[in-house]
Each structure stands twice: as structure tokens, then as C-alpha cells.
Length: 424
Image (cartoon, rainbow, N blue to C red; front, top):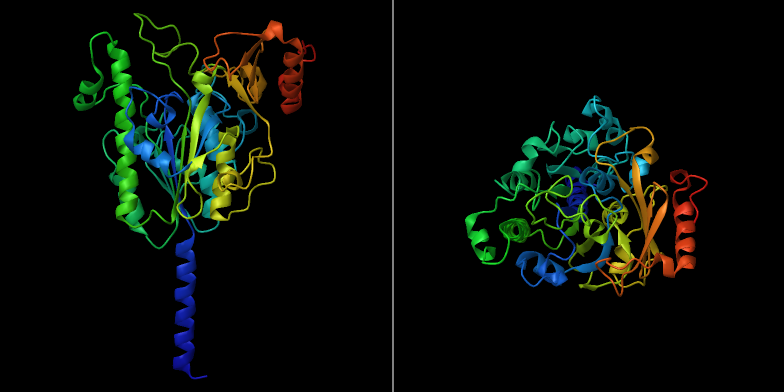
């Protein structure tokens, strides 16, 4: 074989390899911040307008019965980044104990098999933007990022509220390589300071101004999601990009004259064991791979990491507790589970090494039943969500056998969290 022919064949082989590389899907993870599961047009809200996310929902596999294990942002984001429960990754609370430097919590993420770190092994580049509590973006294995220090995310928090340009620059920088994008703007999170053009839509007589501002923030966040999705379309990336959407934890706006919790959120939302803080829609859009439709499976954000690994062809760690949502999203049948579990922690840690010492509640949802176990006592609340989605009628006294059965499931799920006398 002549040298010329050999070089031509090698060239064709290289082009083929590049083409295969380009076919590896990109992944965009959109994370809303402090937004109730009800507060979207596609989830039935009759006031808040979310046209761009509604369009995304119409093109996605939508799981409306999604949950975060922990209704606190740092712990919830760490679960999204790792696929583990808080008691496994040990980032359970927003802040370390009083007097302990924040850097004492960083090794938990540095040593974790985080999604960006795992994807980098197979050639993915990744960008962190927005909310990120774990110090430098490299602590989670991101190849690029906006956050290098700070409590919430310092310079990363400019994304969405001030600019989308860092995302555009990142995508254009190396178009031949697949990417993972973490878009977690601090929106609609406080400060609720929406542009006047949005506030004018919601401010009206009889509606408290704080509520109008929150509604306007939801639409402002939706607009930024539209800017990101439109950019993917403009660059011809729609077909080869999987978009996943979740909320880090819920929010019910407090409208009274004083706060009744740590912030301006109602007691049955953020930091609580109720669906107002825990529930989130989960969406997956992957054109040509995942058909649009709604699915009634109970899902959890522990499922996001294995789903990303499944999409990208990355080996799923054996000890991950979650499931890939791809089979169910593709119509292969229901997920092989009938319950999801979670853990509620204090805002500021008591102990960094022993997650159970920071617990306030455990919870489990099985079918239409939801059991909440308060760690001090313990006492139990039981709700039948099919009849009582806002968890207003505790029926624990009427169904002691259901309480006992679901409590046993909590004991099996995390035995170390519950003292020996914890059974009813």
C-alpha cells in the first residue's frame, strides 16, 4: 500500500473518530433555586407565566412526582452533583458549626465521585455557573467555572441575573468536545428584585407586594432558561444535547409583617419535611432519544447522576442509590421502586462527621402515602397525598398500621439514623 493511500486511510479514520466524538451528547442541567413545585405553567399555576419552561415540558419526559431528599440548598445541590444522599456525601447543612471554617466541609466534595469529575475521565469538559457552595469549582471536578470562593458562589451568581455570556463563550471555545453545563442561577431565590417589566405584570391591588415580586422572579428565571435553550438551537446543538431540569428545593412566599422561619418563606416549604419544600418536577429533553410525555413514577434527585451517566455512556458507580430515568422516560415501563426517601437537617451543622446528629426529620413517600418522622420524640405525621396534596390533614392516628409499616421502611433505608426505641 502506497504512503499516500495509507495517509488517506488514516485521515479518514481520524475524521470518523472525531465524528463519533461529536456524537457523544452534551448535557445541560438547569437548576431552579427556591421555587415551589406548583409554580410553573406546565404544573398548573394559574398566575405565574413560564412560557419557555412550558415549551421545554412539551418536548420532554416530565416526572411531576419528583423529590429532593433534603429541602436545603447546599445539601440538595451536593446530591445533584454526586448522586448520593446527604448522609452519604455528608454535606448536610448550609454552614459548619459556629467557629469552624467553611473550608472544613470542602473535602467532602473534593473526595466525591462527582458528576463533572466522572465525565472528565471520558473527555467531557464542564462549566460551573451560579450556585456552588463548595469553594473552587475544581473541588467538584469542573474543568471550568465561575466560582472560586464564597458562601453561595461569588462571581458565579452573576449568571442569569446579569449575563449569560460565560455560557456562550464556554460552548464556543471547543465545539468539537462534548460538554456538561451546570446552570444553577440564584433565581428565583432572594433577593426578589425583578426588572420592573416583570413586576408590572404581577403587581395588582389585593396581592401582597412580596408575592408579586416572587411571581415576577419566577418569570425572570424562565426568560433566562429561554435564552439558554434558544442559544442551543441557534448553534445547532438541540439534537445532540440532553437537557435536564429540576428545582433544588421549594419555596412558599411569606406575606405577613414578620418572618416565621429563617427567611421570608412559609413553614411548610424550604427547610421542612413537607412537599412545599421537597417536591420538584423533573424533566428530560433529548430529541430523537426521549419522547415527550408525562410519567407518574416516584423519582428523586438521587436519580439525576445515574441518568447523566446513562446518557453519556459513563459507567455508573455500583454504590449509587438512585436509578437512571432513561428507561422509564423512553417508555420501557415503570421504575423498579415504589417509594422515595429523604432526610431533613438543621441549617447550621452540629457535627460535620456524624450526619445523624444534625437530623430533624426523616420522611418517606410510598404511593399516595407520606410519612414524616420527627427525630425528637419521635412523633409521626401521615398524609394521603392523593386526597390532601397540601398536607393539611394528619391521619396518623387513623392508620397506625401504615405508620408502623412505613417507619419500618425508614429503619431499613437508613438504620443508623434512628435510635433503637424509634419504632411506634
